[in-house]
Image (cartoon, rainbow, N blue to C red; front, side, top):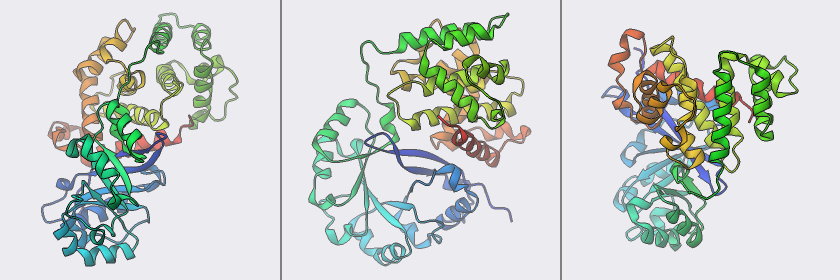
Length: 396
């Protein structure tokens, strides 16, 4: 009997330098049959999961109920941390399993622990602890983070929504690990680079879409920004099917890329040339772009603009500005604008499905509408994995 598909997505856990420390795996247990337990789910996942493409040799964080730990499968590799939401009574009840699994190589963390009831006797099994700003409130969270009970634990801060919270936590605690939510915090600063980059995007896209495309004019526009010029040459040389070409300047890079992929590679080079943003943000934007493109090729084979739609969906995070403002007066196809602002139209449908998948909201994906195209859960998961793989192959 063929095993049911186990859907998953990953979320980054960042250190204080905005480098990726680990990946949180989001799982969809409901994709298995009702009789399958967590052991079947994880065994199935680990069996076909291309670890090297999904987690980049980083630790994997997985959340689950403590009453499922008795059925954990054999550890497939030694960088898995199981996070549990558990009371003192439950920890004592499952202590034999915690001891046995720890001896077998598993590591454990606690989610929003109740430190008023827990003692070091129960906390000894846990290396990590997740603390949520929403769950505790900022005052209690700071107190918990500085508690002697968590002194030797690695604390991951969750659900930060505004910069003031981050500033207070950074100033008053030694917490140095944060959930990916941190990347959505916007700090509006005067004299930012939005007008400069917006002008550059507008000029280059206008030239690309001109009836009489001139690669010399496009390369001259790009060469105004030395970082962008460097990035487009480097990215072009890193692409597998371009490696045999000798590329020493922007115009030669554009000639090798060709008109069909020009917008795609310009978009990638643009985002990766923006200073002050973490590397993981580039990777998230590019992998989403590949994912949207792959999905659109199945749903709407003749549709153009899917890659740029996925890529530019991250513009607000890069430029700390609202999407409507960023897109105003840019020479983008109206279908792309509609997709980015409202998630409407065919491109909007593809982007919406990808965003639902990435956030683990698989129940909201209308799989029944895609059945006639042969697009199911397994195919969507493969698209997701391939998007991560393609992004990993690029050199920024």
